[in-house]
Length: 183
Image (cartoon, rainbow, N blue to C red; front, top):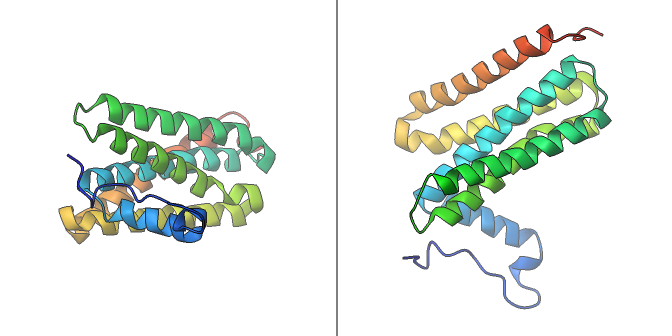
């Protein structure tokens, strides 16, 4: 049963919060302070999207690709990540809240992909890379802080940044070893 606190905020009528930035701030608050199921789905989806996106963008950066070359892979990754994470969440549960968790996970996975890839569309070279890394680390920080309630601060940070470090390390190794990495 959905309670008033779990119900999604609704925009009603002209001039309501659904028409601008206040609407999205309200939705973000609803997501982050909602049910633990939604929060877990948001954390998992965002982190999956961010680590996947950083891997693809870093590999393309090492390969000296132009920003326009990032569009198709990132668009494909965003769609596949959202569909895979949302679909996987939907398929893994038979509870009534499954659809909401699947939508939250898909949306947050898409968000994680886009946020980390965005610098490569507006900046160049090392500046784009450093900005992307900072955004990935920022998402990691937010996720670790959210998870500290369940795991304790030290364990939440170690797990979150450990996974991020492994993802970056493996991606870096693969990207450098790919044919044409230095050209």
